[in-house]
Amino acid sequence: MDGAALGYSHGFNIVEVGEQIRKDITVVMVAPKCPGTEVREEYKRGFGVPTLIAVHPENDPKGEGMAIAKAWAAATGGHRAGVLESSFVAEVKSDLMGEQTILCGMLQAGSLLCFDKLVEEGTDPAYAEKLIQFGWETITEALKQGGITLMMDRLSNPAKLRAYALV
Image (cartoon, rainbow, N blue to C red; front, side, top):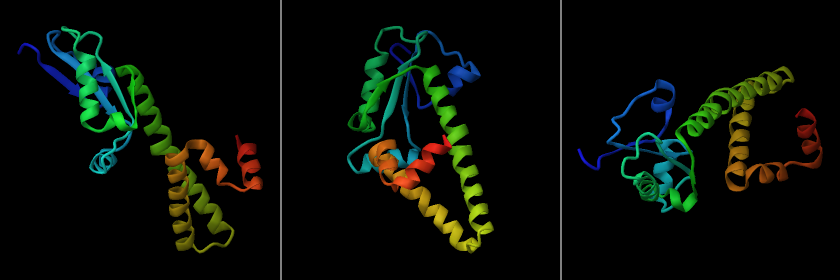
């Protein structure tokens, strides 16, 4: 169909699977950098979430891909939080890094280590579990509101020194 466009919210099928799309179809990506539930909640609030946009370099027959991607990002509210031009490859690499090391690795490993240490030191397991749960929530809220700077600013000076000594 003349003028058809195909949109992705993640570049995995194009980059890792190697999916080939007919050259007469414009292929764009609008990749919100949050889970879908948060994208929806922010949209309902009248805002949006940071979003990456891209046009597949082999699939932009009429040169309209970027305009389509920008319009789609604006329709989801992404323009209110920030839209960054990217590429399918960069999105996949950053997404997999975030998912495989941070979302599906670091937080879980850190939680288990903290839990074991707290229990080993005599903390009731039920209390240790809640302490970790709400501790992560406090940290992630600070990150969302003010980035690493706010997260670190909320620490006492001795805690900051200990954090820096660990890295």
